[in-house]
Length: 283
Image (cartoon, rainbow, N blue to C red; front, top):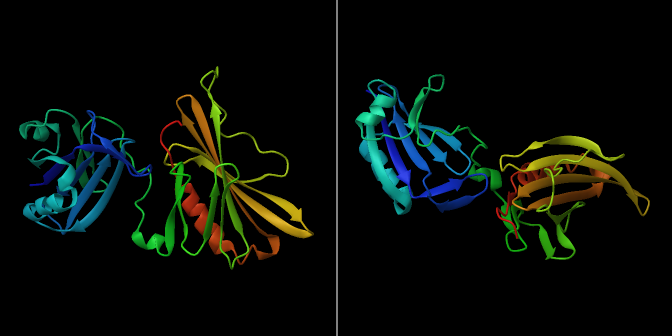
């Protein structure tokens, strides 16, 4: 008979925003779905702040080992653990185990089920970041935490509240800059324009909504400085907040002739700047 092991946590968090707040009626969970046969156990992690869900297949383990794992990994924020037998694979199984709220959601194509505690629409907002993805990188905490992102550990970092940030490889050819603009929208009569149309000379590369909920545009322009042809790649990230709109503008300037050699560096920046963690509150 399938079994679902449910750990309720005392926090509600967001993976993509790197937030962890006290539970306030909604809360995170760690769940293990044990099918009635087969070599796989599914670990299901739900994040209540933005209804994110991460699912991972593990080798078969007994319930006792999984309970011990919960004590080791989330024991400091553990509110309680329920073991639910699933003879019908439906909500009656939850009720029989004393869980009256929420529902059992079954993903037959993925062969797992999980408890949805609040009826929200859970979906994977961003895949978990594998540790090896950030080998050789270090976290940049910009101006006290207004933004957090990861860059190569060998890069220099200069930060100033007035002139912004400057980040570069002392032996490289490109320079990354960051400026943060904050607009008061408390008197606005409509929603702010988070993705303005491109101006002449701005070549759109990408755009959309990031897992953090911020609006994103990537574009590039050409420039000439001291007779040298340059390219400037922009990542513009707009965050809507109560009474405020905050716009993060990253720009990476590099010689046009070095574009092919810097492809790997540009790809790394594109990946990590999209993962930037903005400060969650107005300031």
